[in-house]
Length: 305
Ligand SMILES: Cc1cc2nc3c(=O)[nH]c(=O)nc-3n(C[C@H](O)[C@H](O)[C@H](O)COP(=O)(O)OP(=O)(O)OC[C@H]3O[C@@H](n4cnc5c(N)ncnc54)[C@H](O)[C@@H]3O)c2cc1C
Image (cartoon, rainbow, N blue to C red; front, side, top):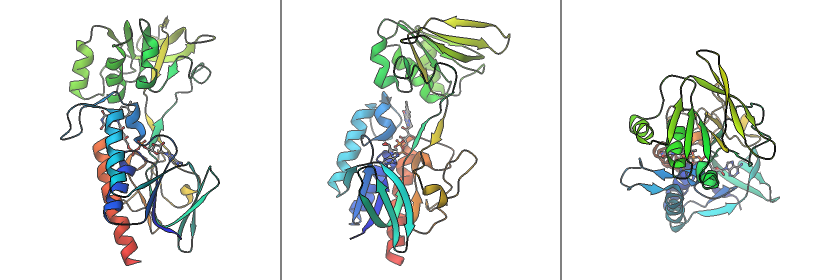
């Protein structure tokens, strides 16, 4: 029998949607390809979730998962490989070969780091090039590392890396950071952090592992090699859109899914929430807010259709 609701993605948006759907006693399954919690699993410390003292990303993930499961959410470990519409709702095929059917669908597949595509980046990924300081930071004890980017994640994770590294170089193409002021202040206070203003990375150098990062100063055109052991890229996000979904939704110029304020997409019964959605602020609080609204909207759709 088809479920009432399937949720694709178990980050903060999906787990919150699952918790609300469980409390509403819907027959609901959540498909998660990795570990529930999504990007917060790769967040060193979350300090801006209201009502919660600073908490590690892993701990916050575990709490969100438990709360959703306690309310009746069933989490299935599977990757949604194909989404299609059928007469009674949606069919979701997975990498395990199973097909799930539901009358309503919420997509919370999140976002993934943008790759710069500079020489050496792909070749040395996993051998010094990383997109996750929490995962790979401890490998850089007593070494120098570089962080590319100037937003919240870049600067926050640079400060985190200073726990392990002897020096953390932030490579930023502008002459001021985009990160929130309190995060900037932490970086300015950290003696191990050095910011290379108006600089862009040109190539990651090394054979078996990262040996250096080649940099250009865009103001004076000079180039130099920074001897580092690790390079962490935080230069933006792109949406994760499961195959088949593009035919059922409208997207903005960046490929993010356009919804109305009820998280509804252009196809009836289909909703999107969290980072995958076209919006201004991609954070945990906005993801959980979206997830709650999407579940509530799905519930109303199911009752009225
Ligand atoms: C390093 C870093 C630090 C951050 N720090 C903070 C912070 O301090 N405070 C804050 O508020 N925000 C922070 N953020 C942002 C925050 O983590 C995100 O805004 C939030 O996690 C978005 O939640 P989401 O549920 O929309 O997506 P995600 O967290 O991206 O979760 C999406 C989930 O969907 C799963 N998935 C994707 N495709 C499929 C598929 N086809 N089938 C099954 N499952 C699938 C993924 O495995 C993932 O678990 C940080 C992000 C990063 C990367």
